[in-house]
Length: 105
Image 1 (cartoon, rainbow, N blue to C red):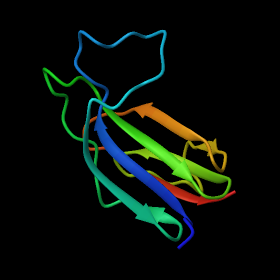
Image 2 (image 1 turned 135 degrees about the vertical axis):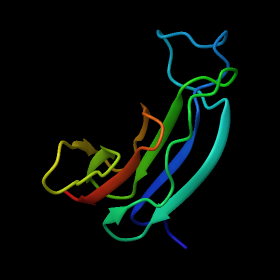
Image 3 (image 1 turned 90 degrees about the vertical axis):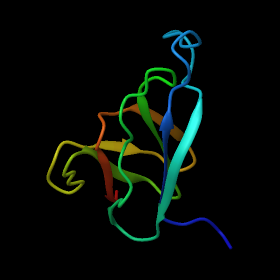
Image 4 (image 1 turned 180 degrees about the vertical axis):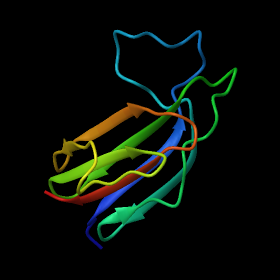
């Protein structure tokens, strides 16, 4: 079955001794994931900061160009948002408890 909608993976950026701000984010530990077939918000939330695993991070993957918002109560239609191009992985540092919302661009 072909991928459609938006997929979000939540996890950690990796152990603090491995983090280097000059390279791409690498998942140190995946916590949860969710695929949204239609516009809306995730039910999963960003995990708390972890002493050994680092900052919470979302990886966002869109099947089609999409507007994406991140926050405690994100609104991809009227709130602050960014464009997620289809076929591109976006890794974003987030705050504990954040969710992702999306709508078609």
